[in-house]
Length: 79
Image (tube, rainbow, N blue to C red; front, side, top):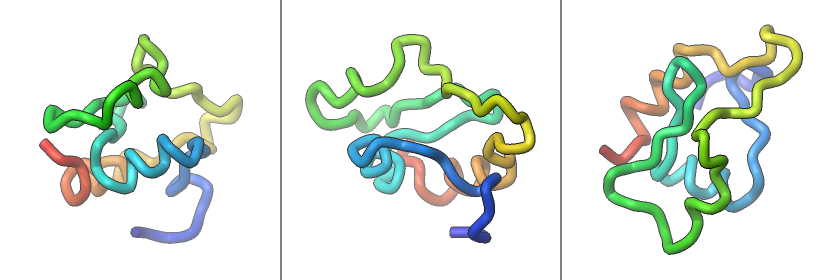
């Protein structure tokens, strides 16, 4: 949901995009990846960096906007 702009997007692999769309992962405002306590399918956590940090774009203006991350946490993320 939201506008079709860079700050409302993420570059994700197909599988990680699937996890994100289903609310099994999300991002905090500090761009750390959170896994749903409901769990994710077997071995898919290997697709996430152990540090749980997002690889950030070189230009900070291309980071996801905190408002869009908050919306995803509130409306999609399975707590």
